[in-house]
Length: 381
Image: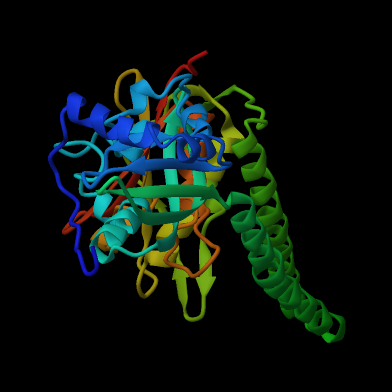
């Protein structure tokens, strides 16, 4: 109906009511046949965001062979969204959902009764592994036999986003660093003062390491997302490791020097893990903490013995806004501009999928922002 406004409801229809709505679509023989054969993930939902019909690719993505188990579920529940069970009534009812662009696209479509298109980052768990997608979400209202339904289509644009990220990495970040390195070498050729020469060489080495590190990070992430990243387990001392990582992560920016302080009570114990991947995780957290620090405020880090596990932590004095907190581990979300957003995402991906640990954070007054990485002392096989 023209001008009708549909507001997402928090209640669910009964199983019997869902089956009746499912049959309304199923009886549209040509339509349901074409819909089932659609490429890309697609489903038909009712005004309560419950699925009443899904295409074959939606079922395959959900690991299902038939449609019955998905009927009545909401989109995030059917796709095993990491926040689907956080709210009091599933998908759409948690504090995270208000910032979910899949949910918000549906809500916008239901409110306006017009086709709505947005992009979204989506994370889910499959067989205990974190999976993330960048999606184009299309929600379109349709009427069948006098009933208002909505077709939701999820198109995977992860490759498109990866290309944009790669372009950002090489054409902006690395190009800027390479240009700086070129300038340093030009000055170095004409420098005669030994102390100045040594300083220029140090800056050049730092710029070279940054370039290599950025390329290595991207290659590592691509391998990690494909499940091809090797894990090499060794035994090492937590305190020695943390002190080494902190020493490599003191940054100079203008008039400020951001120092990384190792907590004096940091635990010194032997654990088993992949030292290189853990170094990557903590380095990303330290870089983020330094960037968030104001006026050169120090960043602190430590490690605690919690029994069967150890907890590495990184702290800075800044506070993360609530809306950012709810999206911080999404693949393409960033406060640093378009196509960034790999830092905290890579931390979660590497920690949970490869180091078999858990990453979390708190951000409030007066504690500041503290990211934690919990790992087993003995690497689980």
